[in-house]
View (cartoon, rainbow, N blue to C red):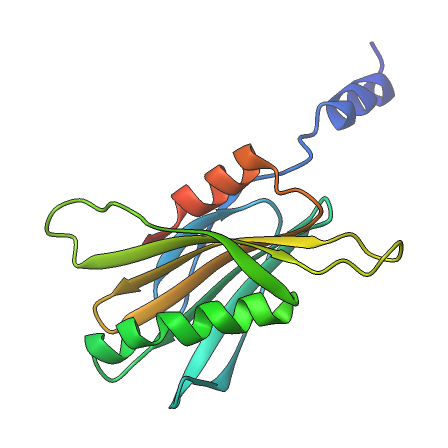
Length: 169
């Protein structure tokens, strides 16, 4: 076989989602993302608290994957940040929450986690309703939002891979 034929075969076998482990910066975490992400940090107001939030974002197959991370003055402030973070994300898609549940952790983890699914309003024929799947995690004085947004339905296996791969450090 020629080299060109091997190249074509290998390109044809390339996975659509090229999962790779990503590490957070100032607010440490690991997560699997399906493409090379970009990162930035900026000050934001969460509830009534001003914090520096880092965002790590990747896009693949019309899906957006993001991890937002912030450090607060205390564990209580980090825990209180979950509600405003959740409502801001849902508002961004013009949506409503259709599922919310606590995520069971291991005993002694000092981690609180909540999974949320929301559906956004559609824009008639111009844009289908967007869906958002998210996990909000608090560990000590840090709050994280792990988010996937899709036009239309969320691919269950992809959401599970992304959300369950997230580990605060």
